[in-house]
Length: 219
Ligand SMILES: Nc1ncnc2c1ncn2[C@@H]1O[C@H](COP(=O)(O)OP(=O)(O)O)[C@@H](O)[C@H]1O
Ligand SMILES: Cc1cn([C@H]2C[C@H](O)[C@@H](COP(=O)(O)OP(=O)(O)O)O2)c(=O)[nH]c1=O
Image (tube, rainbow, N blue to C red; front, top):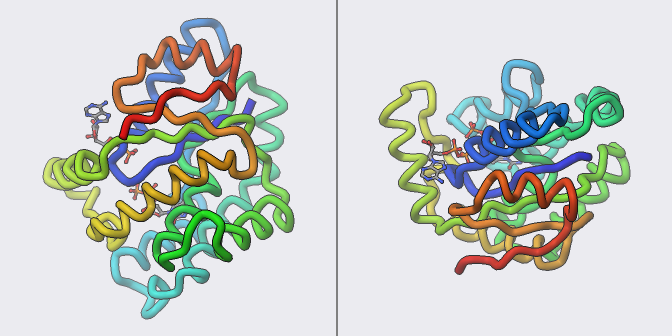
């Protein structure tokens, strides 16, 4: 299975990924966990991160330019991903193509039915033929809580300086709204919405048995 975790910056995606991996490993499953952008492995990912910290001229000001960089990272990883999916019980990804859809639409003030979301789908899933997730998890927590966590993470760890997306509270809120609409429409494949208090062990078991059961969204 290919399972992805989506959500705004600071939502707790990395923490949820660790919990799910531990639960699946404890139950005897073989799990491989990775994340996008693949910093340090993909030149496209590194350039995008640097652009979000103010480098590379006007690159970050282009929504389609940034989305193309993130998409090319996945294009370059697609063959390895397919191999891993065939070899392992579960491949878990912290962010995937839906991040590109949600952030790009939010930057352009478009909806989940807008042009850039359609463009991301055509580019990544059709032209680049990246693997389609079996289920996409949306970690739905209040944007203010996520923003406070991203801020305190920055204070504790100098290498986690907030980038231009993380510093833009309105962008994070619009991104959360697009994510909710993508999940409601089961964009590309089934979604499942979970809140911050989700029981990770229970979720891990449910995902393996009934991957696309919807869970209540917390407002
Ligand atoms: N359920 C939770 N309750 C409280 N704090 C959390 C929770 N999940 C994550 N955190 C904390 O919030 C911060 C951001 O979490 P992280 O998993 O790195 O988010 P993301 O990967 O979505 O940016 C971290 O400092 C983490 O320890
Ligand atoms: C993977 C991905 C991330 N993003 C955005 C979301 C984040 O705000 C930003 C950086 O990704 P993120 O995973 O949050 O990196 P970091 O660990 O540095 O916080 O890029 C996209 O716009 N498209 C994508 O395809």
